[in-house]
Amino acid sequence: MKPLFLFPMLLLAAMLSAPTVHAKDSGLAYISSEKDHAITMVELKTLAVVGTIPTCKRPRHMQRLRANTQLMVACSDSGRADIIDLASRRSVGSVPLGDDPEVFDLSPDGRTAYVSAEEDGALNVFDLVAKKQVTSVPLGKEPEGVKVAADGKRVYVSSEVANLVHVVDTATLKIVKNIAVGKRPRRFAFSADGSELWVSNELGSSVSVISVRDLAVVATISFEVKGMRADDITPVGLTLSRDGKTMYVGLGRANHVAFVDAATRKTNQLVLVGKRAWGLGLNRDGSRLFVVNGLSDDMTVVDTTSAKALKTLPVGRVPHTVVVDD
Image (tube, rainbow, N blue to C red; front, side, top):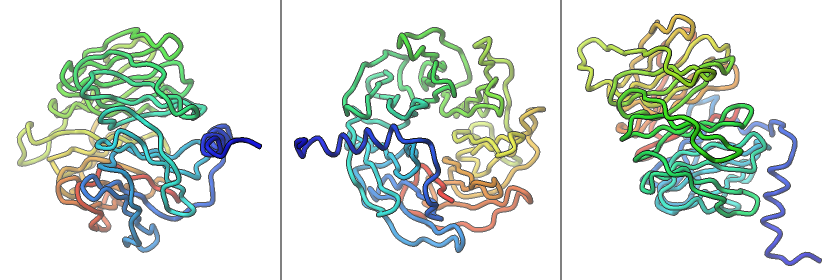
């Protein structure tokens, strides 16, 4: 008989190694609330808040784990991630993530977490099965966004102060290149074919487009909003449409979302949402875009076909990330 203390670790290992299948859909959107230390649940059919899930302190970035039955929530003030079971809607365990974790990404097999450690100026690497840190990769000051390539061979990390994107080889855990981008780079999204990596430049009012093959910036997309200064346009969140034709960009304090044609790199639509449009999420068919507004403590739901806001609803104090489970 195995010791009882091994069961949580064995359960996590089994979950991480499970085939990638979509669990029974909860029909909910989950939004992390930094100041409420909770996750707000919104029913997708009615667009109404239906409850909250208590979690660790200052929950921020979230992702579903590989089997899609659980949600991993990084909590900056707790130095760990909570594991939320989507069926029971409660925390079923935790994983240490070091001091002040904010953004993370997972290896393709779901067994490794790459976590930006802002105060340490490093990328921390964690074995989720063993629940321990593997190593720490020194980077530029204040790393933020983290994105793992689809093949798992590289991880890209933005450095807000150095204005760089660090390219880290996951086999050697060494930096292979530092790419200069715009001012205060934040988050990432890949193009549909994976040949381009888009990074938002919060204080540059722009997005840098990086060639994955050449590891060089091939284009810079600047944003303008009528009646606003460039300093008020602060892009952060990025997500690609389901058909790969449109990149949605949250423009932060400009209180808009930009619809950018991925091929021409031109802005086609601007949609007014709440204050400090930050985190973005899409439903499965791509018909609705969910925009988390950090300064108005709400979320705006946008119809992507008409480029019109459908509803804005309160989702807790200082919402950070939205995960849609439909």
